[in-house]
Image (cartoon, rainbow, N blue to C red; front, top):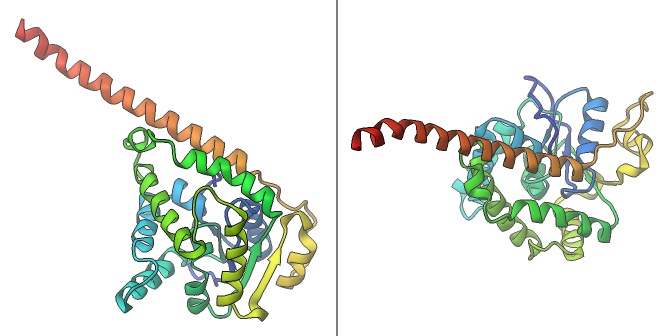
Length: 261
C-alpha cells in the first residue's frame, strides 16, 4: 500500500495468486513478480487506495457478499474478481489474500505463493495498520475525496472477512497468522502452494517460477513507511479540501449577510 496503482495490460495471462497477509512483504513481492513475469501486478491495498473509485467500491460490493450464501453471491464474487484481475499477471495483498479458494477455482493453473514472516514481528507491524484504519474522524476527513470517502466502509468489510476466516480481526494476533496458513492448506492443492520469505531474495522465487535470477537487487519496499505516508497524505488532502469548501461557503454567504444589514 502507498505505491502507485498498476495499469492492466489487455491479454495478460494470470499466473500467480499472492496469498500472503498484509505486512508480509507484499509490496516487495509485487514488484518482484512484476519484474519476473513482465506484467502488471494487482496489489490490493495500493489499487483500492490509489486507483479509481470503481476499485474500492467494487471490493466493498464483493466483500458485502462474502462468504457467499447463494449461487448469486458466488457469481457476483467471481464476476468482480474476473473484472478486477483482467490484464494482470498476479494479485497480492488484501482482499484477494482472503479469497484464495475462489481464485484457485477461477485460475486453476495459477501458482499460489504465500509471503510469510516471523509471526510475532507480523503482529507488531499490524498495529500501525490498525491504528491508521480506525481513527474515529477518518470518515469525516476523507469524505471530500473521491474513492477514499469509502475507505472506512472498505476497512469494515475487510474486518468482516477476517472474522469469518480467522475468527478475529483487531487486534491481530498470531492466531490469525496460523489460521491463515491452515486456511491455505485446506483450500489449495499441496502441489500448487508455496511459502516464501522476501528476505530470501531472488533465488527461491526464481526457482519456483522457473525464471533466471535478474541482475538487479531484490526489491525492498517498506510497507510500514508507505502506509504511514499514504495516511498522512490522505488526511492532509481531506483537511485541505474541507478548508476550501468552508472558504467557498464563507465567500458565498458574505453578500447575503451584507444584504441582511
